[in-house]
Length: 346
Image 1 (cartoon, helix red, strand yellow):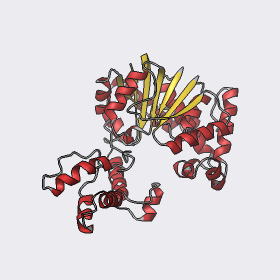
Image 2: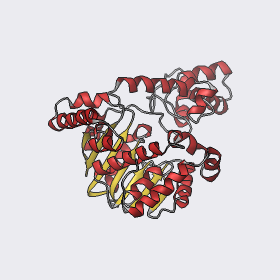
Image 3: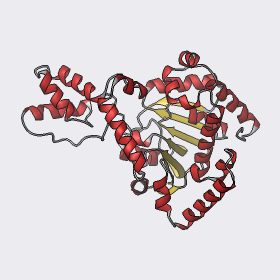
Image 4: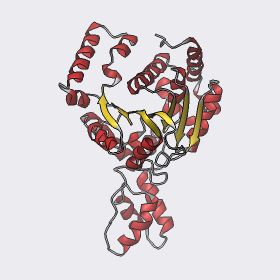
């Protein structure tokens, strides 16, 4: 089923669909090999592309995004282009990884979209002026932020008064299966086999990365010492190792608190931080953002209809929406879904 968007934007969606219909070799050459890994579920899958657009549509509607929107940690630019197709006037994407910014620009050129600009930048120090955007989208990125409090302060800074933010993520700490899956992911990132690491886009596990850095930075250590320290510094970055290793050698203890349960020590990108959506709302409020947890698209009747849900599924969603609006069983519903959705207003 094709998602309903205005005719002009529908043409943009059609051009975007042609990208996901390309073979992997062509995508790797035209855009980047990692694009295939990130969007493997959408490749050659028109229904999957429609589902992705539906998800962005729902986020846009729930967050009441419009005008000039910042797509924070915009990755390869697919969500930003979907926002443009849905009628958002102007999108600025910011990402920490240069490869992703370059690829997003290539994708924007390929699908001939205007009004999308992609910048290289740190979410904790945004290259944007105060009160310069009407809305902020943070999609599947909050669980990777190295300094989340700084990021939310920056979001508040760049939002205009009355501006809106929508944040969605699939690392719901209140969902037990998500917690278990995330802890397994952390272990693979730290000690996984080459085949396991390749699925995550890694060639070397984090423990080995720390071990190699320690051996290079502190050549007086033997292999046994470097291994011992690497195994006991999970959650440490290279910068933190520079401070921690001398203290360990002087028997002064670790002293430093790990940056996260699992983090890439080189680029300092967190590997899927677990997030409590209720506590996150409290944190956002401390930065001047009036935030609340909303039902995800799993509970949306309109999305379910477009995906061909039968009457029983629609009835269940209507019941869930009613219970949510009254506050009855809201926490239970939050715990039942792997992802969560937060909308906020400055």
